[in-house]
Amino acid sequence: MVASLDLQAFILRARVLKLYRQALRVAKRAPAPSKGELMHTIRQEMENNRDCNDKQKIRYLISEGLERLKGLDEMLDMQGH
Image: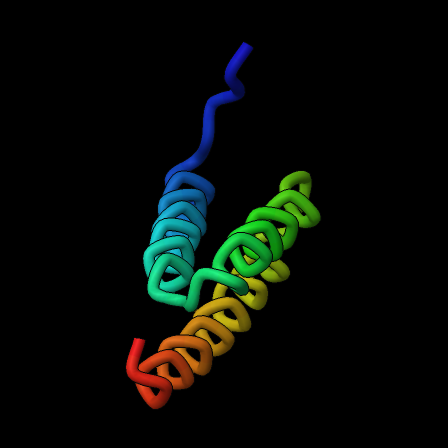
């Protein structure tokens, strides 16, 4: 049974899913030898925090994820991928 979400929880969930999709898109640009490991790591990070219900912690994790994603994106750009 699906629990109903308040508006704030719904928005946070949407932001998490958006971050996940962005991370997978960036990971697909990685070189073949590390692409699989990178995608696995992204999935694992999401799974590790799947049951988090603390909205403040979720906001922190989103901002941390965005920073890490930005760094990865810049690194791949510098490598020409």
